[in-house]
Image 1 (cartoon, helix red, strand yellow):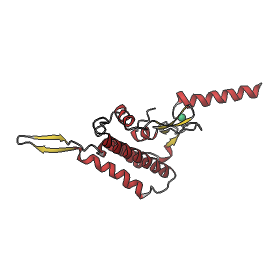
Image 2 (image 1 turned 45 degrees about the vertical axis):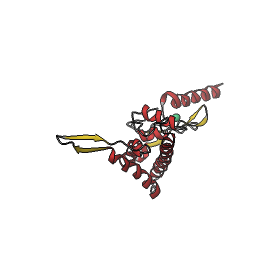
Image 3 (image 1 turned 60 degrees about the horizontal axis):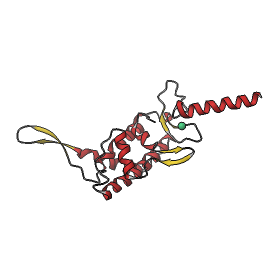
Image 4 (image 1 turned 135 degrees about the horizontal axis):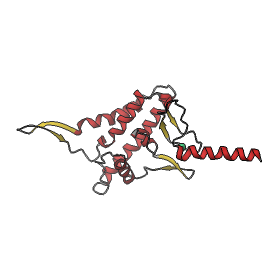
Length: 189
Ligand SMILES: [Zn+2]
């Protein structure tokens, strides 16, 4: 499900599939595929070329996800985001700084992409940036989890009246509607 915010999409990699808690990012390879699927460069995750480096980035990604979750939850409750979480997010934000550099090559200025270290956090920085934007710009009451008890997906409610309840009308919304319908039928009989 696409939330239009890559940080929430990232949180939503922890989901429920057929009623079971499922982590869609359970291997470095899954992380690489996910990053590519949301349009992020997966540099630093050449799983075959350097398994240890890919594993390091994978661990960083999972830590970042925990951090974003803690931050979003605290923010939603109007609590202070713990300093260690801010530190973790800022560490990843910082990593984006050095990915390009303006270089004079003797004739003209060119923008050079630096070869990022294999364990570079840069691949994750767009996610941290999306989280930072969410925490500073979005209405905290509109960052919510799906109303279904069998679903944990996050969404940003951009509806006019701000009363969206489901991660998606096509799945959880319809299920709730069908359940209500069934209850009504049962009551009528
Ligand atoms: Zn849902």
